[in-house]
Length: 360
Image (tube, rainbow, N blue to C red):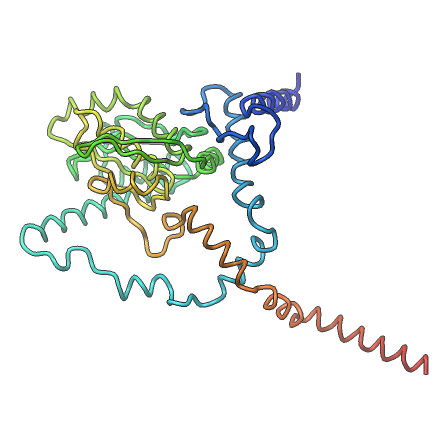
């Protein structure tokens, strides 16, 4: 059988399983409709599951974009709204006027602690230089330039899959920690992990009890995958380096995975002091869960980066703002002001004038 035939058969079977799992052919909002990925809790283990997950991710993204937005609002209205000055000034202006430099009002030991934390954040930001490299060899080259030697690379998984991000387990002598570094979206498979954004129930157990909420399914499944893959290596690394602590670092999609994974690890007594630095972390959990991990997960946002400042509620507000912005009048004015349209209108006027003279 040809490759195209195999692919077609796989998609057909996946759609059959999809319809079976939905409980029948029901439209959105009808009685038979169920939550997307209801029976899925982990990363796909077979190619058929991967096809099914991909189809569901595309369906979910369509439902949140073209299925919700009017096409003209999505393609044109957003651009025209972005041209307008925000009523309260730019986000960067708000940061400059209302923001407070970290540690500026601290003194003594608290100020020293703040300096050490800033050093840690700067160190973690430097990992992004390696994670942004497209070639695996270049990633390792950048990490070596930051002071890592061969025996500091405890686990290197540079190949990603669907709901299976790339990650590194490193011995970082500069901050005296074992670092689990999780890469963000870089490949098409990483993109599908980010697109698998249906909400899944999740909980965290800590000294304050049990906190219930929802998380981004793609990042939750990715966190579970990494936990299963590195648990033995984590225990071995911590046993071989008893004076080091465990530090998780992630960027973008990897930051969401790192935050969720940190919550999981801290439920184990041996990893109860694990902390996380999430660089450009997207909105990946409900507010109660986010508040419960605020003491050990630090999010770093660079200026007005769009990824960590977006949320479903924000998108709903943006859609309402676009629909109320009356952008169509601006669009028509711009169209009429273009050279091509003016030339066409001039030509039609001259043709109309000529016809009038001929008729007279």
